Length: 116
Image (cartoon, rainbow, N blue to C red; front, side, top):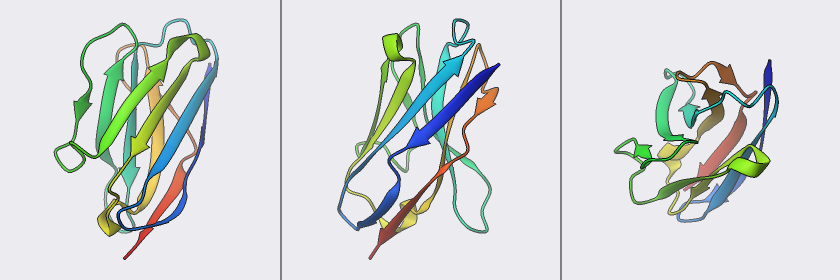
């Protein structure tokens, strides 16, 4: 089993930045896909960005391209989400997710609130 723990959420003004972290523990050797989803109040969970631990370019949702950057530290089994130029519509609970080939493991979520 794999456990994911997110950190770094909070309250920020529009135009500001936040950096989320997600550390994996447990049986992490078979993890390849790593990503972030988010869920705003009253809305469905949506894809934000994904990346493969084995390499390749990240895949971003159009709504965050140019503002958000995903990175990973394979040695630490950690994935990061740098969020710049935040907008009120970015307000949501952000979930880290990982898996061998699909998103199987999920974190508990961290709240990001962007005030206008």
